[in-house]
Image (cartoon, rainbow, N blue to C red):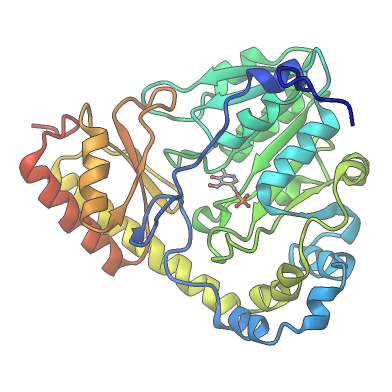
Length: 365
Ligand SMILES: Cc1ncc(COP(=O)(O)O)c(C=O)c1O
């Protein structure tokens, strides 16, 4: 074999070379995890029972998604052709962008928002047009409407949005979809169960609407990686062309029917989180810590210059929270997932201890 020149490597696409690697701060998370907006307790026991029965045969076969996809569609009141299961909403975003974003297209992105929109869009040949929120972090509706152009190809709206838990109203989403008929309007309802409002029922009326949902949050199945995209058959046709038929694995498919059937578990978990959020917000107000109103299972707080030290102190006290200070408009901010009331009382105790020794400039005096 000829000797290989050690200085020549295959070149990646210019777009990919320009990308930064994205490393979410996972690492050692052996503490109370209020950093990734996961379910902080567990999935339904019905899912655990299915997991205990997974056989070697299950693992040997390629996963067959169609029957479970049909079941999930029926659960949502949709037809099977309107739903595609994905490897989490992350894959949903990836395939949607792959299917629709071409060179010269624009992706409109209200910011701050979920990081993966930017990651996947950067890998395409489209241009990202960020539309920043004002300091109240409310959905920047007017600015977004003004930014819609003929080359707008996707508008990505997380609803509720992360990191603040703010929402776009149904009327605003309809107005955007009507203003941009040439564009896909993605409404990412990852936190739907905590918010309770959806635009899924508008799929028949708005041909450019695509809705995403996940099993990672309220259902407590982030590790299984299951999400979905729902839209009209025309859009679904293109999405299915770029979606792997095997990306949702056999174990996940086996568990989904059990997760869907245990609605009591879901209702109870969501009720607990909402009660905990109210109690937590009251405690934050009592501590004088600035916060943003949230419709999801997390609250964004302003800590100020010592945000990194605050996150370290919380971690040392056994509570993981997420530094969002480098997000646009979020200087000095930290996002705290809401779990159960008991967990949030522990979080408040850790915050009070941190407040004793470090200056929280977000604190109103
Ligand atoms: C708005 C939003 N969409 C999607 C996701 C990821 O969902 P999944 O775990 O299904 O990939 C997250 C995770 O934090 C999120 O905040």
